[in-house]
Each structure stands twice: as C-alpha cells, then as structure tokens.
Image (cartoon, rainbow, N blue to C red):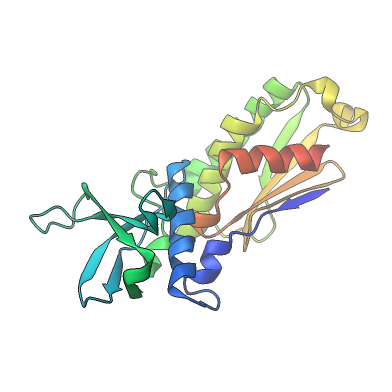
Length: 235
C-alpha cells in the first residue's frame, strides 16, 4: 500500500501554470497554514496592486471569507517602514486587487532559520538513533538506511532528511504495538529506507518501508501527514 500527497501550492508559484491572482493568493494562504502547523518555511513577501493605484506589501497571512467579505489578510511592515518582524495586519477586499508580485520566491527552497542546520555526520548519527527508538517503542527489530543514490553533499538533501528523521522518530514511534504488525515483520523486523524525491511518499515493499520526502520544504510532511502515510502503508 502506498501514500502520496502532492502539495498543490508549489504548482501555482513558479513551478506550474498560474491562472489568476486569486489562485496565487490561495496557494500562499495554504503555505502559511502549513507553516502554522509546524513546517519551517520561509515565505516570500507579496505586493498587491490595487485599483486605486495604491500598493500594499507584506506576508500573506490568510485568504478567504471574512466577516467583511472575501479578501486577504497581510502581515504588513510596521509604520517605521522596517522590513523586520511584521506587527500590523491589513485586510484588503478581493474586489480592489488588480495584480500582485511575489518577491524572491526562491526563499521557498530553503528552510527557515528556526530549523538548525544539519550535516552528513549528524545524519549518520541521527539515523541509527531513530531506528533504535522505533525498535524500543514498536517491540520489533528496526534498522534504517539512506536510499540508493542519496547525495549527502547537497545541503537541500541533508536538511530534508534531517526533518524526516526527526519527525519520524518523534511522531511515528508511538503509532503501533508489536501485536499490530504482520507476523513476518515481527519475526524478521522492519527496514526503513529514507530518501529525497519530488514529492512526499511512503510505501511498504516486503520488509522495507520507504519514506521519501520532497526536496522542497513546503512539501515536507506535517506530523499528521506522516502519521497517516505510515499507518496506511503498514495496514
């Protein structure tokens, strides 16, 4: 059994066909909600161009229906014009927006500074520690390795795997008891194989559970997605 959950927002932000201003705002709103759920995301600033000729620049907080009608909430710069942490919130109605610009969309390709930088050496220590934790909590032998062709010299690969290892150890360890496993797995044990690809994907092949995370931080698995994917694959 396999689980795959492509992240649609990335298709609207420079990696697919953008059809409208509103599609981009909806995509940004989804990305903000993923950041609020725990992903270490850098989000690009957006400038909205209004029918009045004015411009509003900030970080898109939410797009949807509000008491005032449909529109967008922006975290805008403070009144002194600084581009640091935004403290003001601005509501812009849907009907007054003509166009928008996303600034430096490439920030989506690197995790936020809230996530500590990892290294190949740290990953090689972290991986067996995670497997030992799962062995203890699941009650079956668990080993872990990186997938074939994994290049630990690429910073994006290292950070993606660091996130996957950490969340697997924290979130997945309490999912199942030994009695829930196939008798063959209880006897032989389970091998985890972690790698980086285009999208987040989990599948079980024999005694090997493949966990493939996206190279894009916006598509790294949230805790709930990781739980669901592993539960589905082991069912």
